[in-house]
Length: 101
Image 1 (cartoon, one colour):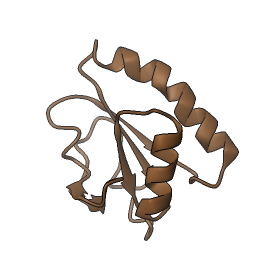
Image 2 (tube, rainbow, N blue to C red; image 1 turned 90 degrees about the vertical axis):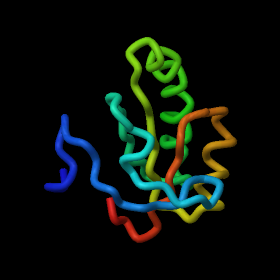
Image 3 (cartoon, rainbow, N blue to C red; image 1 turned 120 degrees about the horizontal axis):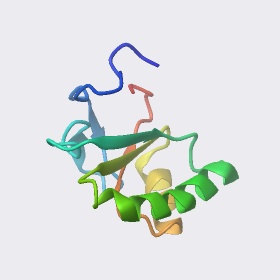
């Protein structure tokens, strides 16, 4: 795990485009709440698509614990959006083409 990303810490303010092309700081979706950060393998991977679908079950319980969720993919915005709409996920997806995270 990168030194910048340690459990329990507020995420650094890396700006990445979301699935709609809007820039978001990685710490924005976290706010004051706990957050689950998923670093995905990418849209090309069938296992990644299945994992994102399975995470929907967990996401339903996140609201109970005031927990947010974000998926960061090493894809461009188009591929990131493609994965999100293929899984009916409603949490934020971020595109990290340069693999900053």
